[in-house]
Length: 312
Figure 1 (tube, rainbow, N blue to C red):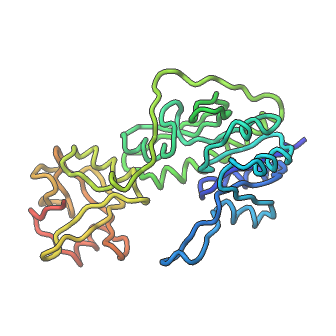
Figure 2: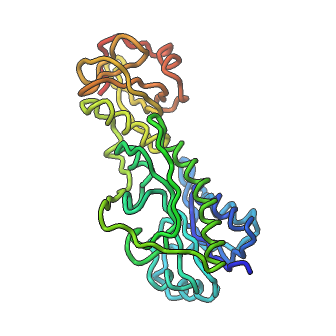
């Protein structure tokens, strides 16, 4: 007998899981997602979340409460009389009334190897820290921040040049498959829960604009991890000289290079090899403000930079 599921998610990352649960034959009684957001240059139009759009295509009921502080929102959730809530990147803190508002509780698909990288930005933080692996975990939610017992895990290696976008897409598909398997086990009464380890807890705080600028005084490995951990969004950036002014450049991809020199200086050798505090990085895909993403060779055709030019 299929489960009656309330699905709660917002971004692209959540969509494959919603589709996988539908394909597995479960009844999605309602989809909760964040409200439409202002979009366009003047913010005059509103855009529904990726989950909202996917749910409408699937013919599912959608609700978009701002939060669950209102009695009517909590009561409407409880009135669905669901077996379980599935949460994937919903983006709201859920009160205990919601976490316990279904027969079997709420299960979350989290993109890290808990207890490492609890919190908002586990994919970016894992790469920025230089982790060699991460994974998807299905856990039963409790009132703590990603502290609940774990039901299922699948590890994923992080390649040395893998970006946050690459890892996002891989984990997104792994997570959908893993959640479908977990719900089948839950339906069969065969889902085992294991408490998280007490050691190794780290927190993946939200990425803020103030940390996106590249600091070439850091070691090359840290600069490289910083760039790929923020690619494609929000993007790591630097500034290059453009006449009497500096022009912002977003760096989408890099790799570890060869050479030494003053931090931020363009070195002889491979195109756009930049000296760091120790070692160097090659900037391989770049984008000027308002321009296209270009390879290093194409970028240099329109922006010749002599050795010794300094990025800041």
